[in-house]
Length: 182
Image (cartoon, rainbow, N blue to C red; front, side, top):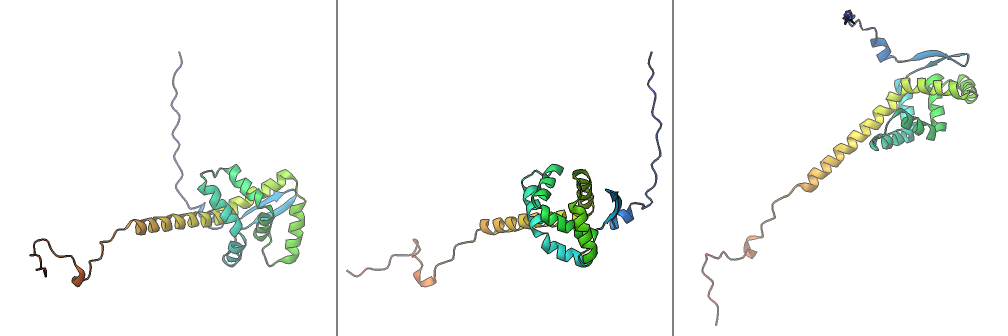
C-alpha cells in the first residue's frame, strides 16, 4: 500500500535587500557572440534624449497595449517594425550617445550578429531598457483615459436654463389679464 509522504517545509530566507541593487541599477553584463557587453539603463540626461528619439516606438507600444494584445511576441513585432530605431536605442544603452568611436564599433558588431545572438542582445536590452518605454506608453494611456473621462463628465453636465429677463417674462396665469382696449 502506498503511503503519502509529507514534503518538508523549507523556511524562507528573510528579505536581505539583495535584489535592491538590481532594481535600482538593472545593468546586465554578458558575453554575446564572444564579446563582453554591458547593457545599461539610460541615465537621466541621455534618457531625455532617448525619450524624444524613441517617441515613435512609444506610440506603437501604446497602440499595441491599447489593442489588448501585449504578449511578448506582439512586443517583439513592434520592435521589429522599428528595427532601425531599436538598433540606435540599443547602441545608446551599450555605448552611450557621446562615445562615437565605441558607438561605431558597436554598430558594426551589432550589424554582424547572427539571429540567435542578435535576439539575445535584443532581449537583454528589452529587460534593461524596456520598462523605460513601457512606463511612457502606459502613462500616456492613463492620461488619455483621464482626459476622456474629464471630457465625458463635462459633456454630460447639465445646467439649469437661464431665466428670461424680467420685462419679457410671460404673465403668471394667476394674475388678472390686463384690460384690453376695445
